Length: 247
Image (cartoon, rainbow, N blue to C red; front, side, top):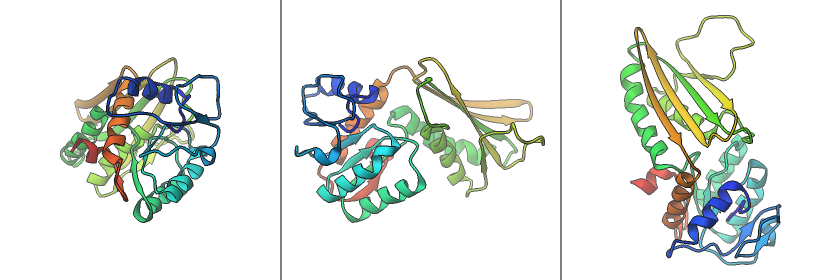
Protein backbone atom coordinates (compact mmCIF):
# COMPACT_ATOMS: atom_id res chain seq x y z
CA UNK A 1 0.00 0.00 0.00
CA UNK A 2 1.83 3.09 -1.28
CA UNK A 3 0.77 5.97 0.96
CA UNK A 4 -0.47 3.59 3.64
CA UNK A 5 -0.79 6.11 6.48
CA UNK A 6 -2.82 8.67 4.57
CA UNK A 7 -6.61 8.77 4.82
CA UNK A 8 -7.15 6.61 1.75
CA UNK A 9 -4.34 4.26 2.72
CA UNK A 10 -5.92 3.65 6.10
CA UNK A 11 -9.39 3.28 4.59
CA UNK A 12 -8.05 0.57 2.28
CA UNK A 13 -6.10 -1.04 5.13
CA UNK A 14 -9.26 -1.36 7.22
CA UNK A 15 -11.29 -2.61 4.27
CA UNK A 16 -8.79 -5.34 3.38
CA UNK A 17 -8.78 -6.62 6.98
CA UNK A 18 -12.21 -8.09 6.27
CA UNK A 19 -11.46 -9.30 2.74
CA UNK A 20 -10.55 -13.01 2.58
CA UNK A 21 -9.20 -12.57 -0.96
CA UNK A 22 -6.71 -9.78 -0.31
CA UNK A 23 -3.88 -8.96 2.09
CA UNK A 24 -1.65 -5.92 2.51
CA UNK A 25 1.86 -7.27 3.03
CA UNK A 26 3.77 -3.96 3.24
CA UNK A 27 3.24 -0.21 3.28
CA UNK A 28 5.17 2.84 2.14
CA UNK A 29 4.83 6.18 3.93
CA UNK A 30 7.07 8.93 5.26
CA UNK A 31 4.83 9.20 8.31
CA UNK A 32 5.18 6.59 11.05
CA UNK A 33 2.46 7.84 13.41
CA UNK A 34 0.18 4.84 12.80
CA UNK A 35 0.85 1.30 13.98
CA UNK A 36 -0.06 -1.15 11.21
CA UNK A 37 -0.17 -4.94 11.15
CA UNK A 38 2.27 -4.94 8.22
CA UNK A 39 5.80 -3.48 7.92
CA UNK A 40 6.02 0.14 6.75
CA UNK A 41 8.99 1.58 4.86
CA UNK A 42 9.80 5.27 4.48
CA UNK A 43 10.91 4.80 0.86
CA UNK A 44 9.69 2.28 -1.66
CA UNK A 45 13.28 1.47 -2.59
CA UNK A 46 13.71 0.13 0.98
CA UNK A 47 10.83 -2.33 0.62
CA UNK A 48 12.07 -5.91 0.35
CA UNK A 49 8.68 -7.61 0.71
CA UNK A 50 7.32 -9.49 -2.29
CA UNK A 51 3.83 -8.59 -3.45
CA UNK A 52 1.48 -9.13 -6.39
CA UNK A 53 0.46 -5.52 -6.98
CA UNK A 54 0.91 -2.01 -5.59
CA UNK A 55 -2.04 0.24 -4.76
CA UNK A 56 -0.96 3.88 -4.83
CA UNK A 57 -2.77 6.67 -2.99
CA UNK A 58 0.13 9.03 -2.30
CA UNK A 59 0.99 12.25 -4.11
CA UNK A 60 2.63 13.37 -7.33
CA UNK A 61 6.03 13.88 -5.67
CA UNK A 62 6.27 10.15 -4.90
CA UNK A 63 5.26 8.83 -8.32
CA UNK A 64 8.63 8.92 -10.09
CA UNK A 65 10.25 6.59 -7.56
CA UNK A 66 7.15 4.37 -7.56
CA UNK A 67 7.22 3.92 -11.34
CA UNK A 68 10.96 3.19 -11.28
CA UNK A 69 10.37 0.52 -8.61
CA UNK A 70 7.46 -1.10 -10.45
CA UNK A 71 9.42 -1.09 -13.68
CA UNK A 72 12.42 -2.72 -12.01
CA UNK A 73 10.35 -5.33 -10.16
CA UNK A 74 7.87 -5.75 -13.03
CA UNK A 75 5.13 -5.26 -10.45
CA UNK A 76 1.64 -4.14 -11.52
CA UNK A 77 0.45 -0.87 -10.01
CA UNK A 78 -2.95 0.72 -9.43
CA UNK A 79 -2.09 4.40 -9.82
CA UNK A 80 -4.66 6.52 -7.98
CA UNK A 81 -2.71 9.68 -7.08
CA UNK A 82 -3.89 12.84 -8.81
CA UNK A 83 -2.12 16.00 -9.90
CA UNK A 84 0.43 14.11 -12.03
CA UNK A 85 2.50 16.06 -14.55
CA UNK A 86 2.35 15.34 -18.27
CA UNK A 87 5.81 13.81 -17.99
CA UNK A 88 4.64 11.45 -15.24
CA UNK A 89 1.59 10.38 -17.23
CA UNK A 90 3.85 9.70 -20.22
CA UNK A 91 6.24 7.74 -17.99
CA UNK A 92 3.37 5.61 -16.64
CA UNK A 93 2.33 4.81 -20.21
CA UNK A 94 5.90 3.83 -21.14
CA UNK A 95 6.17 1.53 -18.12
CA UNK A 96 2.84 -0.10 -18.97
CA UNK A 97 3.82 -0.90 -22.54
CA UNK A 98 7.34 -2.10 -21.81
CA UNK A 99 7.57 -3.58 -18.32
CA UNK A 100 4.41 -4.10 -16.30
CA UNK A 101 0.68 -3.48 -16.04
CA UNK A 102 -0.54 -0.04 -14.94
CA UNK A 103 -4.10 0.86 -14.07
CA UNK A 104 -4.51 4.61 -13.94
CA UNK A 105 -7.73 6.25 -12.88
CA UNK A 106 -8.51 9.70 -11.52
CA UNK A 107 -11.46 8.24 -9.63
CA UNK A 108 -12.00 4.67 -8.51
CA UNK A 109 -15.75 4.77 -7.86
CA UNK A 110 -18.19 2.76 -9.93
CA UNK A 111 -20.59 5.71 -10.15
CA UNK A 112 -18.04 8.13 -11.59
CA UNK A 113 -16.92 5.63 -14.19
CA UNK A 114 -20.50 5.07 -15.26
CA UNK A 115 -20.93 8.85 -15.45
CA UNK A 116 -17.96 9.07 -17.81
CA UNK A 117 -19.88 6.92 -20.27
CA UNK A 118 -23.18 8.81 -19.85
CA UNK A 119 -21.52 12.17 -20.49
CA UNK A 120 -20.40 11.09 -23.94
CA UNK A 121 -24.00 10.44 -24.97
CA UNK A 122 -25.19 13.68 -23.39
CA UNK A 123 -22.49 15.75 -25.09
CA UNK A 124 -23.19 14.20 -28.49
CA UNK A 125 -26.84 15.32 -28.20
CA UNK A 126 -26.68 18.59 -26.26
CA UNK A 127 -23.45 20.25 -27.45
CA UNK A 128 -24.54 20.51 -31.11
CA UNK A 129 -27.82 21.98 -29.84
CA UNK A 130 -25.88 24.91 -28.36
CA UNK A 131 -25.69 23.89 -24.70
CA UNK A 132 -22.80 25.39 -22.73
CA UNK A 133 -20.87 22.96 -20.54
CA UNK A 134 -19.48 23.71 -17.08
CA UNK A 135 -18.05 21.47 -14.37
CA UNK A 136 -18.06 22.36 -10.66
CA UNK A 137 -16.11 20.15 -8.27
CA UNK A 138 -16.02 20.36 -4.47
CA UNK A 139 -13.55 18.74 -2.10
CA UNK A 140 -12.30 18.99 1.48
CA UNK A 141 -10.00 21.79 2.60
CA UNK A 142 -6.92 19.54 2.71
CA UNK A 143 -6.89 18.69 -1.00
CA UNK A 144 -3.85 20.31 -2.60
CA UNK A 145 -4.50 19.95 -6.35
CA UNK A 146 -7.16 21.80 -8.31
CA UNK A 147 -9.08 21.09 -10.36
CA UNK A 148 -9.54 17.51 -9.25
CA UNK A 149 -8.34 14.68 -11.41
CA UNK A 150 -11.95 13.50 -11.59
CA UNK A 151 -13.14 16.86 -12.94
CA UNK A 152 -10.49 16.68 -15.64
CA UNK A 153 -11.49 13.11 -16.47
CA UNK A 154 -15.11 14.20 -16.84
CA UNK A 155 -14.04 17.06 -19.10
CA UNK A 156 -11.82 14.76 -21.15
CA UNK A 157 -14.67 12.30 -21.63
CA UNK A 158 -16.81 15.08 -23.11
CA UNK A 159 -13.98 16.49 -25.21
CA UNK A 160 -13.10 13.09 -26.64
CA UNK A 161 -16.67 12.65 -27.80
CA UNK A 162 -16.61 16.11 -29.40
CA UNK A 163 -13.27 15.59 -31.20
CA UNK A 164 -11.33 17.94 -28.91
CA UNK A 165 -13.34 21.05 -29.74
CA UNK A 166 -13.35 22.47 -26.21
CA UNK A 167 -10.81 24.63 -24.44
CA UNK A 168 -10.71 24.22 -20.66
CA UNK A 169 -11.07 27.48 -18.72
CA UNK A 170 -10.17 27.48 -15.02
CA UNK A 171 -10.30 31.15 -14.08
CA UNK A 172 -12.30 34.04 -15.53
CA UNK A 173 -11.27 36.66 -12.98
CA UNK A 174 -8.53 38.17 -15.15
CA UNK A 175 -10.60 38.79 -18.28
CA UNK A 176 -13.75 40.76 -19.01
CA UNK A 177 -15.46 39.21 -21.98
CA UNK A 178 -18.40 36.98 -22.68
CA UNK A 179 -18.08 33.25 -22.62
CA UNK A 180 -16.82 31.59 -25.80
CA UNK A 181 -18.99 28.82 -27.22
CA UNK A 182 -16.17 26.30 -27.14
CA UNK A 183 -15.19 26.97 -23.55
CA UNK A 184 -15.57 24.22 -20.99
CA UNK A 185 -15.38 25.87 -17.60
CA UNK A 186 -14.02 23.95 -14.62
CA UNK A 187 -14.44 25.44 -11.14
CA UNK A 188 -13.00 24.17 -7.86
CA UNK A 189 -14.43 24.60 -4.35
CA UNK A 190 -12.43 23.65 -1.24
CA UNK A 191 -13.93 23.48 2.23
CA UNK A 192 -14.78 21.42 5.26
CA UNK A 193 -14.73 17.65 4.94
CA UNK A 194 -16.40 17.27 1.53
CA UNK A 195 -15.30 13.87 0.24
CA UNK A 196 -16.00 14.62 -3.42
CA UNK A 197 -18.86 16.34 -5.28
CA UNK A 198 -18.98 16.77 -9.05
CA UNK A 199 -21.64 18.53 -11.11
CA UNK A 200 -21.55 18.59 -14.90
CA UNK A 201 -23.89 21.31 -16.15
CA UNK A 202 -25.30 21.47 -19.67
CA UNK A 203 -26.89 24.94 -19.86
CA UNK A 204 -29.08 25.61 -22.86
CA UNK A 205 -31.71 28.19 -23.75
CA UNK A 206 -34.47 27.98 -21.14
CA UNK A 207 -33.33 24.60 -19.80
CA UNK A 208 -30.47 23.09 -17.82
CA UNK A 209 -29.44 19.45 -17.56
CA UNK A 210 -27.15 18.56 -14.65
CA UNK A 211 -25.34 15.30 -13.96
CA UNK A 212 -24.27 14.99 -10.32
CA UNK A 213 -22.18 12.56 -8.34
CA UNK A 214 -21.75 12.68 -4.56
CA UNK A 215 -19.30 10.59 -2.60
CA UNK A 216 -20.30 10.36 1.07
CA UNK A 217 -17.25 8.44 2.25
CA UNK A 218 -13.84 7.39 1.01
CA UNK A 219 -15.02 3.77 1.14
CA UNK A 220 -16.36 4.03 -2.43
CA UNK A 221 -12.85 4.77 -3.70
CA UNK A 222 -11.24 2.14 -1.47
CA UNK A 223 -13.56 -0.60 -2.73
CA UNK A 224 -12.81 0.33 -6.31
CA UNK A 225 -9.04 0.35 -5.69
CA UNK A 226 -9.08 -3.11 -4.11
CA UNK A 227 -11.25 -4.41 -6.93
CA UNK A 228 -8.79 -2.93 -9.44
CA UNK A 229 -5.83 -4.54 -7.66
CA UNK A 230 -7.47 -7.96 -7.87
CA UNK A 231 -8.08 -7.37 -11.58
CA UNK A 232 -4.48 -6.27 -12.22
CA UNK A 233 -2.65 -8.96 -10.23
CA UNK A 234 -0.85 -11.38 -12.54
CA UNK A 235 -1.03 -9.17 -15.62
CA UNK A 236 2.33 -8.64 -17.28
CA UNK A 237 1.82 -5.39 -19.19
CA UNK A 238 -0.78 -2.98 -20.51
CA UNK A 239 -2.42 0.31 -19.62
CA UNK A 240 -5.83 -0.10 -17.99
CA UNK A 241 -8.52 2.04 -16.38
CA UNK A 242 -11.63 1.36 -14.33
CA UNK A 243 -13.73 0.73 -17.43
CA UNK A 244 -11.70 -2.48 -17.86
CA UNK A 245 -12.48 -3.52 -14.29
CA UNK A 246 -16.23 -2.90 -14.45
CA UNK A 247 -16.56 -4.25 -17.97
